[in-house]
Image (cartoon, rainbow, N blue to C red; front, top):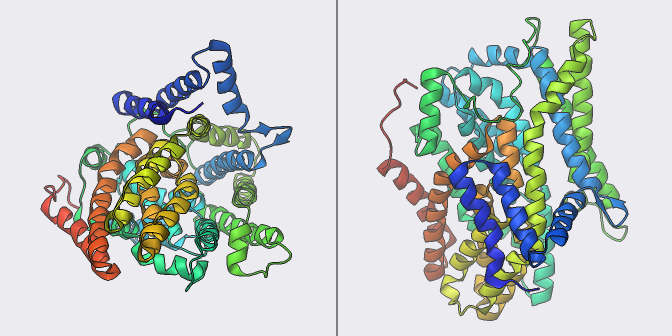
Length: 518
């Protein structure tokens, strides 16, 4: 059954409910139910079967376990356990004490996760969760709201991975570009060169990253973010205690006073080393025999979820060993494990429901409908990159997946550009990447958005609502950049204009200073 424009109804219902109720589980559930009933002509029993299938297929399809999704959910649980051990052992508190003597300002505390977000470019999941665990003790010490930490993490993790050729995102995109180039018989450059040439054309990414650091140094707290920051600075309340917050373990048990920094650092290092090592191992194993093993082939064929699982497993074990060695007793180990698991359950609930509505939306053909509208539209080559940016942004926003948007929109953008004006081929592909990240930043059902709020220990909807104004500023600047590119074909000019617009918005709409001195 083809639903056409009606396929937009479930995501629209979900998004409207999110805005009205701020209840993400309720909103996701409503979107799932409405979509399932539409798919089955509002027949009750088949509709509930559809809902069950969208859930069960996360774990089991056609007699086969869905190992990847199980490993990712297991990684979240293991990360919760690791965090619990780091907190209970006093490692997080010790790091906070150490950092407060070296990083002496709130701006410095916010800058650290921003820089870490750019350094850890291998994978966005890993980036979001690892940076959150390292930075949270420091930002908590300076009363930086968890919503702001989540924004800093989210607006550096996906942007840096989408422009890094040595990353899970980069490898996936390069593979897609290679197929598109071959299909459209584009000559003059290969897929890797094409990707590298597209990097400066990704105007949203550079605008978003630039805005993060401008926000930090100019105290550019606007909209809902300003309210969270004022409350954090005046009352010390980093999150709303009435809302569900993943990963917030400080109130569950008192950290030991004997904790050392290495009780935090060692599990994090183990997590990084084990994850990256496993990515290389699985990448080498996954490279076809006829293909030469290289850094690019390794990242193109790596198993990210398996790597995260083993990284989380070894990190949790290292946290357990350090905690038991410090305590000299096993009496409270079970409680720490249980609290670590409980801390991750809200994030797991949201992620599972987001996957379910993604399946429903996929069955209704929402993405294909939007893509078909673009193909049938009479688009001038001048405005092609701008249109690709807008449509990819809306598609990623509605479906909650940037990777899914890449898979649908990149071939379409390549086909249209190759037909209308081959000079717009790479800019159009770059605009799809930029729009997908923008939509991902705005969507409450995006897995990256979910994991960023999880890593920061922020309420998920608080993160979505506080990040939205900043994402829109970046999108506005990038849109102007793509329009200018269409008329001038100058990448440098368009990128400079994008960054200047971001700067101008910050300077023009700079709010008055917060009540507490930075």
